[in-house]
Image (cartoon, rainbow, N blue to C red; front, side, top):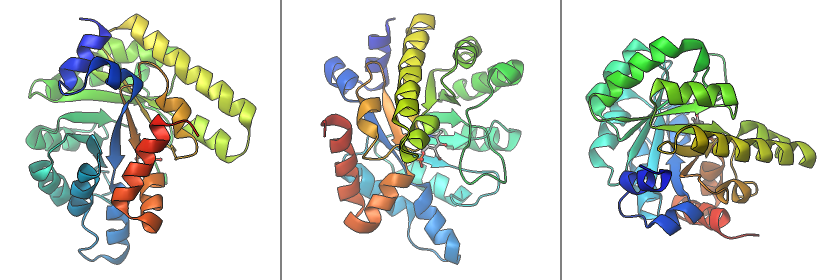
Length: 266
Ligand code: PXP
């Protein structure tokens, strides 16, 4: 099966041409839950946010059930899984507790991420190469109940090779270094990071043409276009900047604006 066929298999409603030129948008709604948890009340509702994002054209919804439950709670995961009409991408650390939850919820995707309690957000990619036997077994246990598995990795050859060997269905390339360079106004570094991400896409395609390639972290309306236009990127996962836009323009409009920024050059 070619990469193209894999894309079609994952989402049969997408035509080949449009899916390659227009990556899908997965909206990460963790920070709707962050706002709720800040007061310990029952609003705003992550479920309502997920449904609004879908109505506005989001192709999927991402939530990260962290071990410390700092934003998304277990009840959110079950509630959202029941009502989504697109696809859930459940981000988890590769722990035994999370394996049990994921196998109960059965989201379309699980994305395995590294997790440190003290971090503000996911800081680096997963060290797949350093935990191959554990991850190979972990991925197989998720796939055994029909879940597709993605690994959040830095755009490094060693991690790509390890992700392929572990049997993952997809990788998500960490775009944090690219985004940070942009925020620091370091255009040379930003371009270098963009080149690194493009190279990582090619390396992945060469290593396994069936593997889907996603990207995310730190993407905003200002920096997303160059990433969205990389041939072979299947889906972008965007959270913080989109929810920040929503404070000013509303969630539906924020989704529409992000899609416009992905597809239309400035
Ligand atoms: N992808 C992964 C794997 C993540 O952990 C995150 C952050 O939760 C994102 C994408 C979204 O990053 P951001 O909130 O910076 O858009």
